[in-house]
Image (cartoon, rainbow, N blue to C red; front, side, top):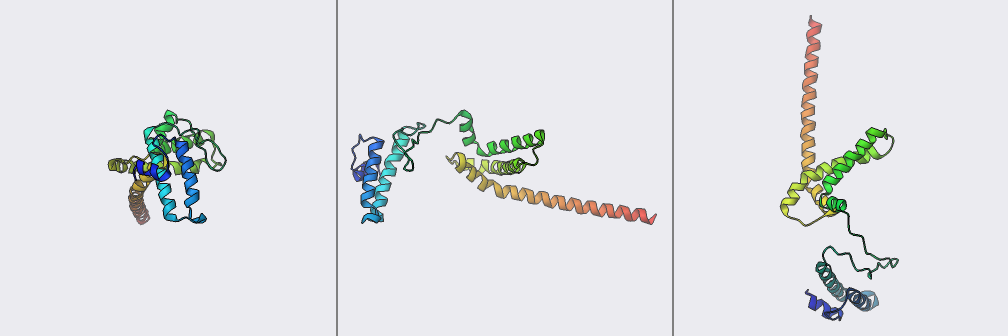
Length: 197
């Protein structure tokens, strides 16, 4: 659906503000909803028209906060959010590395402050493991050329990296098992040799 078709469905002009588009959407959706005698198909069409215009408004102003005039339905609070800090932007662009560093930092805090009795060591360990898994999948996700950031990017990285981490841990456990069995056989052989003397 293009913007002109969406405007036609909502009955707004080309010069309509986001607030006017929102009001037209609310008015129309209340009329065409299945609960008031409309149909799901009509409601979906109105919703699609609103989403089309909303996406267009967001693309027209990349990086700009949403209009202060928009409010959520729960409490009338403004949905304007402050621009993220440089550290916040970096963390959204590199979520796995941020998680890994947070895990390392929390474990350093535990070691330096003897905070063993707190949940911090467990949280730090989980963050560390998830960060490693995410970093193992980061290259694969980057190669696909996705435009995700933040939680969505972390989820994709974890989905790609967790199998690699599990394979690596499996190999490490196998090597450890073989090494301990070999060491056990050598120790047993050494003890038997001493007994024979």
